[in-house]
Length: 166
Image (tube, rainbow, N blue to C red):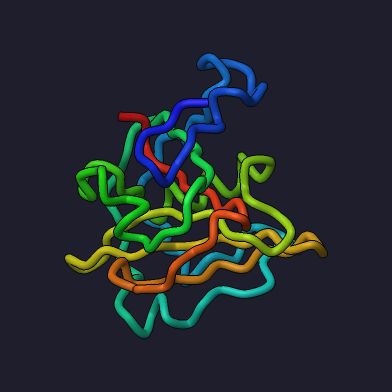
């Protein structure tokens, strides 16, 4: 497994996903979807955090082309700024449309049993983390945090991070 910083190790290259050398691909998106308004993941969405709207994390994004992404698993406890700290945040942000595309198409790569998968995105000139929780009863919960949140996430929970392949 590849390690990109002391907090994350690559896990997606070891998955049998077909095409693209086993790497997950997000289809091109028009950027119009926002997580706060998602309704089309039938019977699976249990909760969407109202803070997406309250904090202004509900801006449409630009259209994007097909994007290869990589999935990492935490190997050390850390904050969001530590997890994403070795990257230029502008280069590893996904749009909300891309995040929803990943959730629809790669549920197998989402962390499960109540643990989260983290996605960095930008809205109204601020960085946020969408974190998707796939619960034990097969429901999705989508929360939002500000990037500067000081919570220390525990590696023992095997949280995951999804970023575009650099």
